[in-house]
Length: 249
Image (cartoon, rainbow, N blue to C red):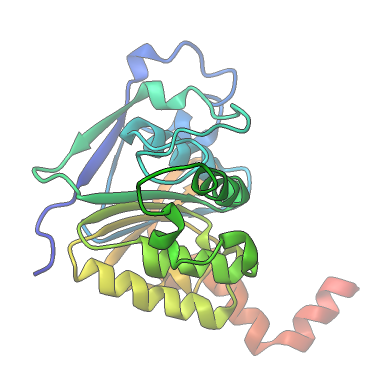
């Protein structure tokens, strides 16, 4: 049975509490133009050019929910460097009627730190089963970057979960990105909800979803075929030689 209600319905910016829009992160276009943002009960995509504030927004949502800023589950509390913004303090979460049984904040840029923390925790004496068993049983550092990413998606992600993913395609080949779509579908059918920031036209192709494009003048809802990511990739594939000439001239 598919979920009837999202675990996370909406976020609201506490605009009356924002101290100023003249410094980071409040000077980002996405924050200047943000009032509320509704989430699809299955898959929500956050897309846009570099510098639009995708990662900052994703981080604020994850931290407001209770995730570690550097990624992992609610139970992870490690910190290699406190670089996250205070935006989460100004984000109000509107939750659904049901609570997820699982969840994960996947952040590509700090995934190495997560893998290191798992190895360090498992090296300490404990009567609990090793954490790495939940990730496939093999140290994430003993796999390629892409393999370790995919091990997390396959082994650690489960049913009835809220999964916030920031650029999960970073180490995935196109074939693995398609396999990731299959995994997302499996978990959606098991009552999981995804919020994904991505540049990948493949990954943003899940049909039962909503795509928010962050732009300098605000947030726009788009379909896949309207996104710059899709149109540029399609144009390049279909007219490679002409585009290369234009790029190199």
